Image (tube, rainbow, N blue to C red; front, side, top):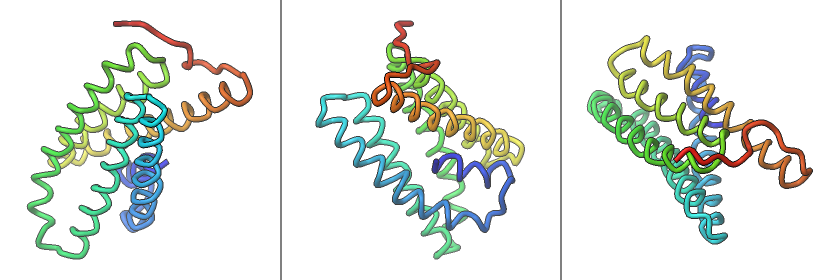
Amino acid sequence: MTTCMLMFVTTTWAERTFIPTVMCYAMFYGGFGQFVAGVLELIKGNTFGGTAFASYGAFWMGWFLLEYLMITNKALFVTAQTGKTLWCGLWSFLTLGFFVVTCRKNGCLMTIFSTLVITFALLAGGMHSEKCEQAAGYFGFFCGSSAIYAAFAFLYKTELGISLPGVAPVHYI
């Protein structure tokens, strides 16, 4: 949900004045909520789920703090833009590592992580190109939408016994 909300701005479907709303959701839903989900997954013994959820939860809390600091201290903005290129590139690399693991999970996770790799790479380029940033918005929106679909697909399978496309196990590596 938080990814989709941010991509509303990145695609220019919404004005930048929507960012404070995204920041609130980034801190609590995308950040704290995912971090807690990660801890619970680790307790269950799911190393991949725990590591991924906790990592992206921390990402969103960090994103919130960076945006907050850039709003409250305009002098940080120029310096932060350069660092954000490297930051997004690093997250793209980390996400690529997670994607490799999804090749033994299912199509839903493969879709989420592959499009997230592309989104982060485009966001890195988007610090220097408006068109690249807008393309990141479209990939990111698809990624976020895929995550929402996956959440319901896994929930429906567990709670209702309904298997939607993409939840079947795969073994590509």
